[in-house]
Amino acid sequence: MPPTDAQDTARAAVFDVDGTLVDTNYLHVAAWWEALRQAGHDVPSQAIHRAIGLGSSDLVAHLLGADRAREEAEALSAAHRTLYGQYFGRLTALPDAGRLLRRLADDGWKVVLATSAGGQELSALRTALDADEAITGMASADDVSEGKPSPEPVQQALELAGATPERSVFVGDTVWDMQAGTRAGVTCVGLLCGGIPREDLEKAGADVLYDGPDALLASLDQSPLGRRS
Image 1 (spheres, helix red, strand yellow):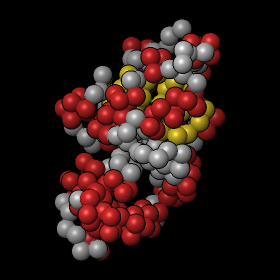
Image 2 (cartoon, rainbow, N blue to C red):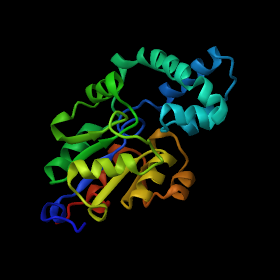
Image 3 (cartoon, helix red, strand yellow):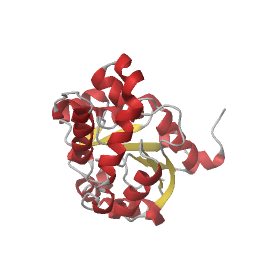
């Protein structure tokens, strides 16, 4: 189907949330480490960190294998939710994350969140971010059948924004984000604030890299999110 007139003009700035806008990656690592330990699995924190950004079932399969995931994913995910939920009232946005979203909205971008979080977790993230007025929509775990690295979350975000891939940018901090954005055909901006090495993000498809939301905001006019007609 050819793009509509609205899609000809709409520009989507799609953002992952965990580790990209809110400083949560290492909290997730700690919660998953404890959930796995309680279930009798000794998984190094470094391996868990590299899996952050996957949906819960996919993360368990990635760390323990598909057979274990079929047997244990539901219980492990529930344990992780309980442990991670202890942090909800203390989640903190990364520097200038809210200002970045508000600036993009002021510049005419449709800002959409694409996240594997849902329910109370997503509400806690939005509270920490404190930029609801800048956000056009959200493609959350509740809205898609497959999480990243599937392109579906990014594609859902573009649909919410009414934008084509050619006029859209996806910002994330994990290899799963970059793979999802690349598969969706959008420009991919990688942020290093989630702790994933530069080389890994580049290999996964990042077109350009910044240290965090503050660095992207400081260089916005020269970035793929610079003002464009």
